[in-house]
Amino acid sequence: DYFQHFVLNEAKKSTSPKGKVKVVLLSNVSEESKTVPSIKAECEKRGVKFAVINIDKAKLTKNPDNETFTIYDNESKLKISSEDTAILTRRGVVKSTYTRDIVEQLEEANFFVVNTLESIITCENKYITSKILMDAGITVPRMALIDDVDSIEESVKAIGGQFPVVLKMLSGSQGIGVSIVDSLSSLKSVMQTIWKANSNVELLIQEKIDSDYDLRIHVLTRKFNSPTPDDSDSVLLGYMRRNRVKKDFRTNYSLGGSVEKTKVTQEQELMAIESAKAIGCSWCGVDIIVD
Image (cartoon, rainbow, N blue to C red; front, top):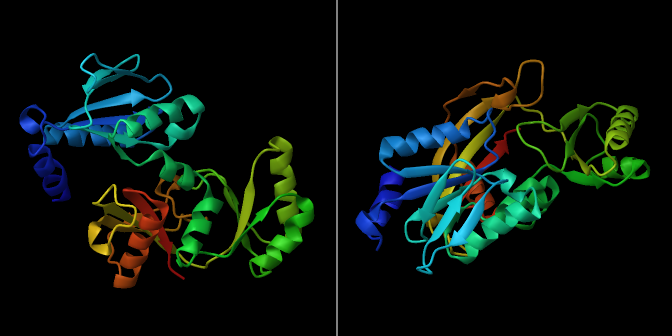
């Protein structure tokens, strides 16, 4: 039980009263999100004090004792300390200078932030993520950025020159903003349509890997502040097989894909750990497509 071993046991060593752990979740607090109620229920079951703070409305103030802080929004208010409080961040924390500043203040005050602002910004950009993984020697699908219509043919050649290809917006989640395109003429048409709707959208194409499923592997790196953690510092919290959506090429559960228990090979386990280390996440969901 990783929670018991790495959270509760460590909390008992804390100088805070009774070693009580607090968890603050910074989120957009979307009504559709399953994450917030799931984490809240788990914290309540384990006796962990929990608060969800709307990052768009969040305020952070230092208390007169010069050691603790108060974080609050329109609904919740909590006194927190870096000695006893873990901060969980959702991707909404990068949406503006204001929201990023809240996270930066917490990091500067030495709060345990999962994940850091830097790693979330990296994960928000599919191109940067892939480049970092490539530099770390991890195999990723061939890819190319497309700046304008004139560069499309050159970009297609760079990823092997074969159709179909996968077209992605640089930012997005749950499979949204991902398309499969089966010809050069269709690719031009789709991209022109996207740019007409929003000329600021950045796009990349990837070679399509034929597979009916991928693996979602959750990695926890235990030496959270180590810049180069050893393999033994990382554990797999869990993993699952995500099957392709019927009549679709995507595997996202949010789009109707099915999930099932599976096993991973030692090679896949090492790839997931190395990927998480390269990106700098302490809690990381790594997707591996198996050709």
